[in-house]
Length: 494
Image 1 (cartoon, rainbow, N blue to C red):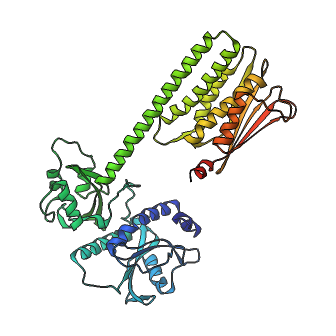
Image 2 (cartoon, rainbow, N blue to C red):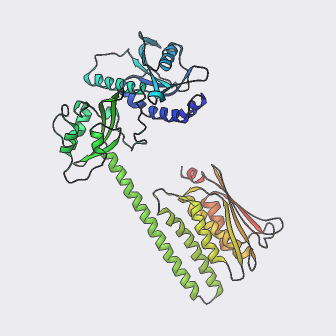
Image 3 (cartoon, rainbow, N blue to C red):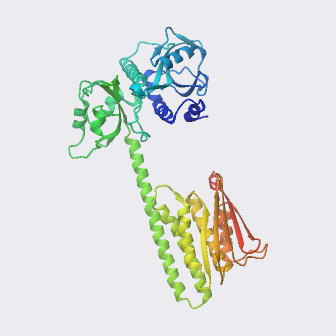
């Protein structure tokens, strides 16, 4: 399915600022649908003066009219005139009589979507509300209040006052919805309506009286412990003066609040405060943070332990009396150090992914320092990018490349001067790495049978499901090509 941005840009009549405005408005589509108890559709004009739907939201507390998604459809003939009039006049246009949609009586309201105010105001789309009249019943006080709130917001949409770009985006998990709890404030911050769910949330916080008729600021002041620090944005939220979000905590309960100031032609007339008990959600988030910190600490300790092992191997290598034993211990030390680099990188972030370009830069420096013999002068450099890899890839790949670069320096360039180049080519589903040296090369078709070669084969073919190929470069030198499918591990886990 095309995204809102794709659909808007496809019409060729909107700027980046228009798209951002429409994105913000579509993000509050569920709020508008729930307040209006109606389907909400967002339309933008096309190059041939028609309109196409770029967003559609169904109400969660009422029957929908559209059982099939209409995003991407052009406006239907029975709504075309009403939508066009709202767009051209920049005024709200209501249907004169019930509109029939698939044998269901409906009422349609077309609201112009205006961006900017005054001389800068311009209509960039139309929002339509489709109310199902087939299930009409005597509205409750809550439904009447919700509808009034919806009408106030529709008026703000038509006057360029909603959405508010100053409001925070990407709300935390558990952002409150209209059905979770709604409080209506007047211009002085006095509660004129509180839904049952909102009252229950504040009761759990410790407020035992009725909210209606009370100043929300004074209510919150009673709830909050006197000595506890609170979010600086809290006073702004509970007075209804700014579009903001915050959490209210008391008695082990956490309630998320979101304020939507209401205005009429620039004058503040009150506010909507949405609230939701998110105690369990915040506990889960805290547990995840604790687990992340624990995992980071584990990686840090593993790194320290590996570095200790590497140091012990280095000391033992220096005390070895035979060249063969010294070489074996040095190689083991280098392998352990390469794995330690991966754990060190993982200990610095929350995600179990690593920037492998950073990891390999450190590994390459380590290998170049340790592998070079007195009579060998190797220049190592890398090109291309590995990108971000999960730790399942990072450790075996780092170890395999350590072996390959070491072999290129110790054997390919033994006793001479030359270059070792590592070339990474990353695509969406594959990673190809070539390790190329300018040394004496290998006889074509012959590959070493040492422990290093065996380790590389095991890591690349066994753990990463990739392929590896050794061949001699035309003229001189050896090139090793590794090809790894990046989705191999995900498939293996299924």
